[in-house]
Image (tube, rainbow, N blue to C red):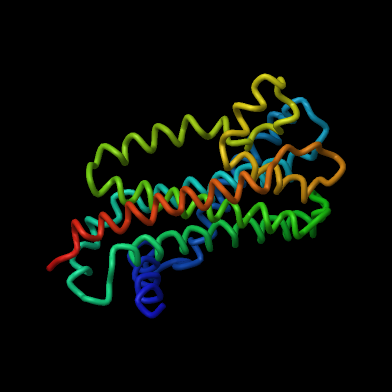
Amino acid sequence: MRVVGALLMREILTRYGRHNVGFLWIFFEPMMFTLGILALWTAMKATHGSTLPVTAFAITGYSSVLMWRNCANRCALAILPNHSLLYHRNVRVIDLFVARILLEIAGATMSFTFLTIFFVTIGLMAPPQDLLQVMLGWLHLAAFGASLGFIVGALSERSETIERVWHTIAYLLFPLSGAVFMVDWIPPAFQKLVLLLPMVHGTELLRSGYFGSLVKPHYDLGYMATCDLILLFIGLFLVRDAGMRVEPE
């Protein structure tokens, strides 16, 4: 815990610096992105064919994408710039990933919480119908993002090509992640295919907690948990292998 805490402080200082708002960029950065998308949707009056409030729909959708995508993006090629730290026997490869993942989860969570409270306060969003469902969906997205971070981070140690390939995959996954649609809106033939993606279940559960009876969600808690465990196991195995490759004798 001390090692990860020290690495967290180092990440904050090296990424955001000591000037201007400093560490507050942890949640300002994802918040600005979400607000930009929200402003665009509002200006275009984009409702995606539904009567759901565009503010709540945009915040729940894009916040969920930032959670899993940023975790993987920040872990890609994370070992090389921190390789010198591994000469300290208490610092391991997994610590580098855990610190970055925790930072991204914290930033996305603070941004999501602040935007929700702000828009509920000014009346542009209604409070969530079921806070437990919202938290469970968010927890699933965090676990999925952490697993992706381990996998992408460990594989990128083998080849820098992995990092470039991942960015392409992330862009392709974005329109399929459930951020811009509800599963119930698409044809039944495509619903089964889309529901193979674990992040879709988390987004559906998150929106189910927010909108309640206004939506008909499609998610499977058992499938979510199974995918998280399998991906986490694969990620930890790859991180262990990467640690054996790069840690000094």
